[in-house]
Image (cartoon, rainbow, N blue to C red; front, side, top):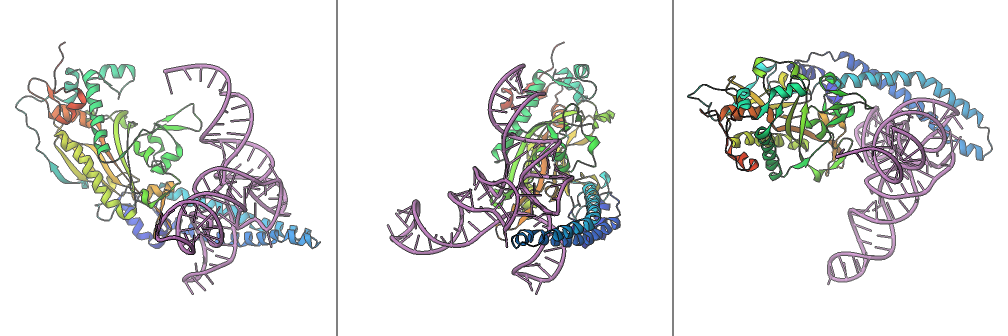
Length: 427
RNA sequence: GGAGAAAUACCCAAGUGGUUGAAGGGGUCGGUCUUGAAAACCGAUAGGUGAUGCAAGUCGCGCUGGGGUUCAAAUCCCCAUUUCUCCGCCA
């Protein structure tokens, strides 16, 4: 939610900022409603004030034995007079709210406008691996090593699903354990949230109302719930409608959940295997900070996410996203993208974003500023740390050997009972 | 899933139609006492948000949320949500 005061003060600037996000909007209607709202509000409040004063005089009048029916009539009259204005006011407020609820976050000033094509790689770490033998892609490797069963995934669930088997399941779990161990070491609090969330949570995170159809809704439960598309949705709602104490900030959380997404339908050849599915595993970090500290927190999250990839020994790059490519609720995003040799491109494994006060406004997540005693909105930030569904293929492909085996990254070995090499299974 | 009960300020809690922004206690803050602290005692403090104003202030909304009854609602009615208890079912 954008602060309506920003729009009141400088609608043109807001309009231009949103345009960078490829969001064309006309704010003149909104400002008109807003002005009308204020007029009607004054009328209604003045009426209520008179009603209240009159009503409050009743007990005293009764005590004095005065005739009270005149007061009753008068209050009733005022009430009838403001009734219509009250209804118009409510209608305006709904319109204003609904309009604001759909607007995306304002991107940071330093971002380029436009979409993906304007993303900038800001650093590349490691070398592109080169191979002196014919490359296998991750689907072939995962199958020959007995790590993933795509056929049976299709059989028991349908397209866009797979089954981790045997050492594949262990590799997946080792990744998650490695992530968890790192976050714990950094003092983040481990959260295991519910996967089925209510409508309000989706609204606060900024997914709704605009992208209500992008998540899976469940039947048979009232009110309806949806499967979380990322643990961020749960984590940024933890302190909804709360006023935190300044000493509580920053709050640093991480959660492991599967993520459920509908996008899997949009298959492309380069997205076969587990690059894009209906469900994938992800560890997500979320921070709540004071506004002046969110830039620092953002750097920390990028560093942490990046470090996880680096320690695995994978070749990757970091991109600063253009305004139009960052998600609806976010003001700034850096992607960490790991190299997938078989398709020769870099795929996102982590998206680190600063949402500033956009989600906090929606969820009324505030803190009390010690100095002024006033409440202020927190900033919320999130970063994957990490999603396994691209790391897993990257490990298989980048660390494959001529004999068809795959080297297990050193940092994962302790979580895999010391297994150093994944070897092809005999048929 | 069935049956009941409850939801009041930072916490506990009183309050069943009329000066209730809401008793009392705890807490917090300040003070007295004390070498210091504790205890005791004294005093202060009641959230949030909107309108208006340079400000002090004034006014609106607020007792889980939404609707209703009434001249007037924390109090009565309806709906929802959450929590608790009992029964059923179950990893």
